[in-house]
Image (cartoon, rainbow, N blue to C red; front, side, top):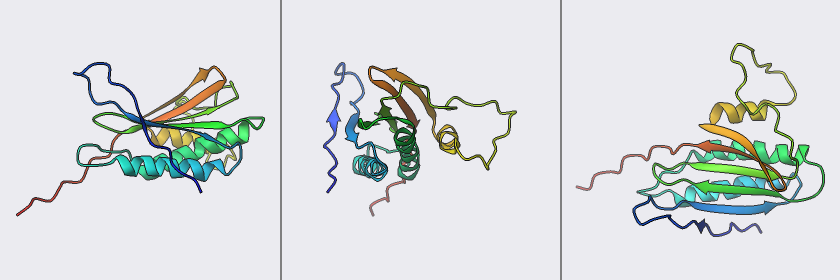
Length: 167
């Protein structure tokens, strides 16, 4: 059975700083089985942290975009080395940043914003996942790592519903 690791909390740089963000880091198998495992970690992280003072990002969007990144890493990364998922819950006003690390140093296709004057072909076989990430995230990108690259996206916090007033 898959168990979600306990969050690791980073140290705050000073007492006056905002509370530290919680983060999870998980090595995933280099198979399609990694996709539902990644979705489960994201779902658990975002639903467990939400509370009266902390707003989480939209869980459904985070799961969808994570599944796209993990599926791309499995499909486009040669070898059998693990894929690493990093979920970081951001301090106030909340939200999250999700990264997928793989062993391929090449940049991930068209993750940068395309020219708005060029229409997107809805019938294209590949590339819709990166289109979703660009369209639904508040920010996204990639960076080189010591062992390949990290592809990431950020989602803002969803507004917390108003709490009912006690009589």
